[in-house]
Length: 195
Image (cartoon, rainbow, N blue to C red; front, side, top):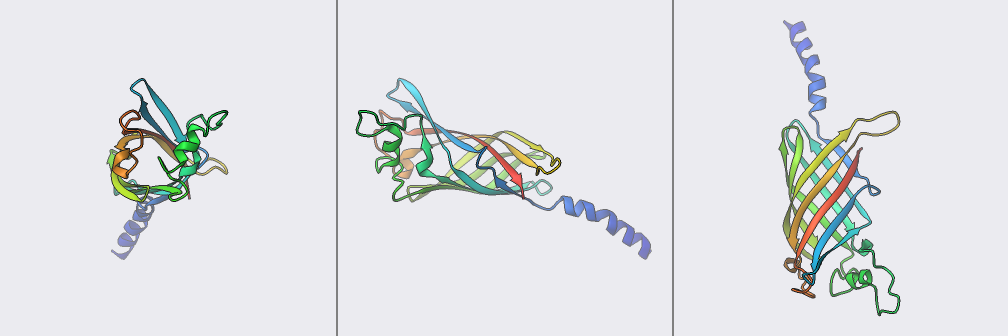
């Protein structure tokens, strides 16, 4: 009887190990929070943040996980960083107090409160966005999720795309409304490497 219990226990060990949460570090070279906003009712303007760091966990067996992201607000890039004959470029204006006020609030953070799964894959994230010193709930839908197994010296890599939206006025960023839209669309391409 003891041999049988020992054998069953040994068989269960790999399953228990596989069920453990896995930790990942966001790959800053392949993660870009992109945003879109209406401009004068004429066009949609786009931008992104170029410096993002963070950590994530995924527990596929328990269908749970966590995500913490930090965005350097000054890394905003809308393709207009040269002022030319103007008093400032669009990117400089976005860094100023009218918008992101990067001198006082250098970082934007996002922390998950719940990650939902569809089958074995994460499909939605509920969380809190902190920007300009204000924290509000912002939910993201994971439109794509894929993992590539570790090969040779390369670690396992997981990533995909997430989308969502929020009102910038909820965070106190009211400059230019309604000529410059209130609704911010998010489209985030992300990748992370297993620790």
